Figure 1 (tube, helix red, strand yellow):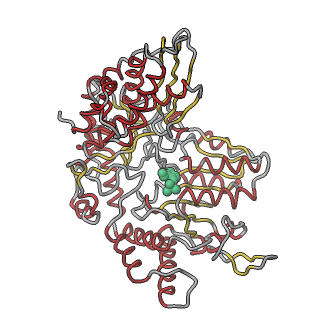
Figure 2: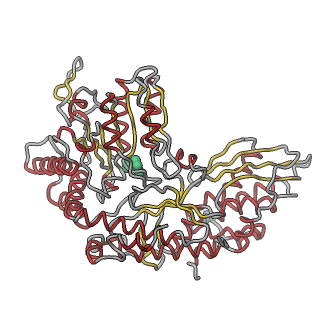
Figure 3: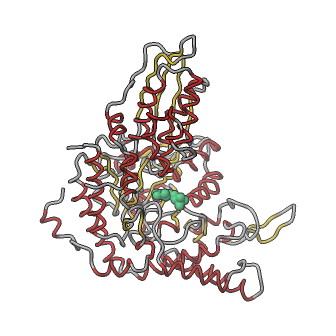
Length: 424
Length: 152
Ligand SMILES: Cc1ncc(COP(=O)(O)O)c(C=O)c1O
């Protein structure tokens, strides 16, 4: 628990004016649920979209919609410019060297499947090792399991420590095995909130020639990400977890690696010339974008990057840290409540269990109070197993959440423990 | 503290009691039918055992499992309701329960559902219908000799 002295070193002790201003950009935050004001604390599943993003998407549909890269007519050119403009925005947003390194996908899951198949599928051999952290989302496990089955590669697991951090000693040990070819880890765990030392991990792997696949789904909305200073070979994330639309995501890949890779999906747009005897792949990044892409969603994602850039991200980070500590202080007043994941470096989310009350009952009762949280295994079954729990309740915050909303959450949790008669 | 009506309708005293002190919560010494139920969405799991006698009457029934209050209470109450009943009647109850849980019929339309009507509230929580019906689906599977069922 935080002492008062420690708490006073936090940047904020209540909701600052700039957060109330930012909230105005998100019309959904004003809605009611069962006649109660919505308290949206499921941001790790999907973040809400600001009006700026919705307006950009609407403007595209109202004035510019046409297929991209295909028409000589004005609309197609405008749509192509907007689509490619969004790619440039994302390139700058993550600090990639070139737009050739920025591939539009349908989301993190799609991005990782691309790497697993187009890189792993062609490079892994019988007996090669894929290291996967124990705290991965199923999206960074299942595609590797599938490719391992096909290639005869072996999956080994980098364990989690009791506090919810990655066992770095074990990692050091494991990467000494020359059979290790690929290492997969998330930048931030969606089940525990842990921020992993990905720059350090990528540097270690680089020395050994191990390819790094970083799942950044939970990271991009909380802090600025620079793929070059992280040193990742591949970095994947989703639009809908950074205040953009669903159906769009990004795979960043280092150009020299992408160049040597085979395409993942075949179809229009990803080829230069086609005959039945020979097909020449298109240039990067188009080689990996078969068929008509999600144009409006890509443009919306560009707008989401613009929106995040417009925030004072340093202040926002400090605010989210304060919110996280405030939430911890309040949550532990709830009888029987235990937080799972106590890493010193965490994004603003708490996963927790309450003695004698199943998370699904907590989730339903909270929902009735207007408080939206996620309950279950968070697509991270191995994490639940590691901590010996069937599921958790997860309250995940964004910069638009307020101290008052944390109070609402905690009040609703007290109602749960009262109903279930949890006393300590 | 005041709770929202929807929660109050569902988390009634009876349900909370059966959750805390589930009845027939053990593996009977002898059983003729068995099935495992699994609701992967919630992580609800349950093993159901029953002994039918020659007249196809449920002589013994027991369950063991882990899950939310709704699934546990539903299994507990189900065991108390079906014990001593002929399987034809059990199957009718299963249909009735299912129809009530999804809101097709009101519990008051069917006197046989009297002791099960505490679960009528799940019809307002579509995400929880599977929790309430898991035990019943498992029972149905056991009677049909399907050993593993999933409500996903
Ligand atoms: C850490 C992490 N990785 C991957 C994913 C999958 O993202 P998507 O469903 O957008 O492909 C998620 C989302 O739940 C996540 O939290």
